[in-house]
Image (cartoon, rainbow, N blue to C red; front, side):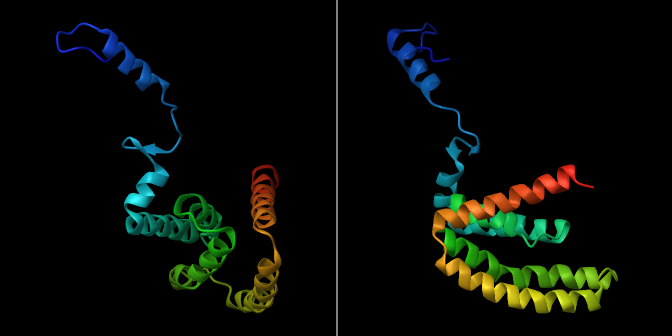
Length: 159
């Protein structure tokens, strides 16, 4: 509560209290600043933190990190849709290579299946990258959101 030095509420301290309470509370505030402000203040630290979270999601959940990375690059770092998708894809090789080596060391990788998937992935990646270049940003954002929502629902409700 705002109080004058005497300990009594004065008209000016009451006005300060009203201004304080009138500020909207935002989800995602840290230390008095919103996440975007912090990201602008410490861009390298923010980018490394985003990479760490993407790597954790890749290694732990096996999702390549893009599920987290694309929204973080768009909404936190401020990249345009197309650049966020392309940047996310570019980080896949080093991120997944580290995870794959650990999985292989633990004998969890089916190499025969992995090579077949990789061949299909290369063809699909080529076609997908060409299509993305023709896709308007809003359509790209909505298609990504629908895909993530559909997969999420399937995992939550499906068997």
